[in-house]
View 1 (tube, rainbow, N blue to C red):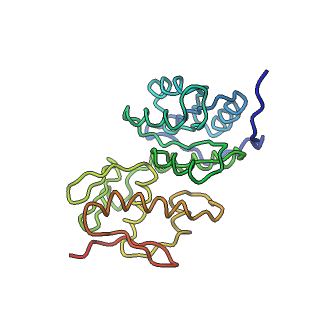
View 2 (cartoon, rainbow, N blue to C red):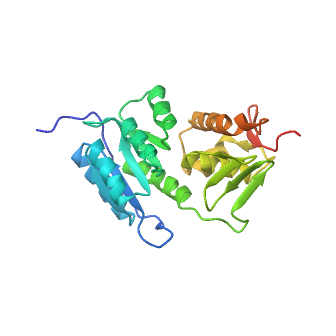
View 3 (spheres, helix red, strand yellow):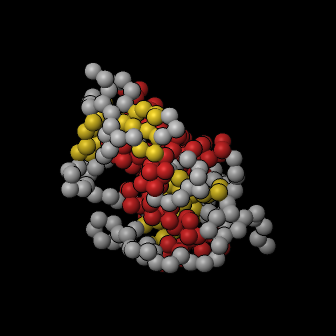
Length: 254
């Protein structure tokens, strides 16, 4: 007899959106990791309705094996699993060189748990209960960023001594490489595409996360702090707060 889980999921399958695909035209690959069979099946059906190829793992060890074999473009990862925790799974994925963006599922509604997942290298989170539409929308945003190709402006952005290559996903400052998660990369790219322009929290949410965060602009502050630790720690500050307005990136003062 299955144990009762204290969360609910909206039962409707999202209406198909414009199809995303890998650069070679093959379907996007998604790995769902959750030990509740009904939830895993619902997410798999929702993602298949998007035209994606989706596989499900019920525990951490199976997730690590499937990640090696399946090479997903995005991963949905429950925090609470029967063997490893979701955080442990993510740490092992990153240690193995797997940089696929990760969306955490958690029944814990505390800021500490959310920050722990993002700090460990996750890219987004959804707190149960949630709707399938919300999860799929967030995954679309992560996949769009990860599979994005260079624009007509050229693949390399440069502001001062900071450079970002949109094709190789390499970032460096004054020649020193900077390792970023998919979300950190997209946030920095948005800032670098708009140098010296003050961007509001709402603009950043709309462009980087691609959905309404319900007014929770604290996610922006959190990721700005991550970028500052990685970018501004290598020289004079480049990311500045404009009080009550937003953020701006500009070359360091010479």
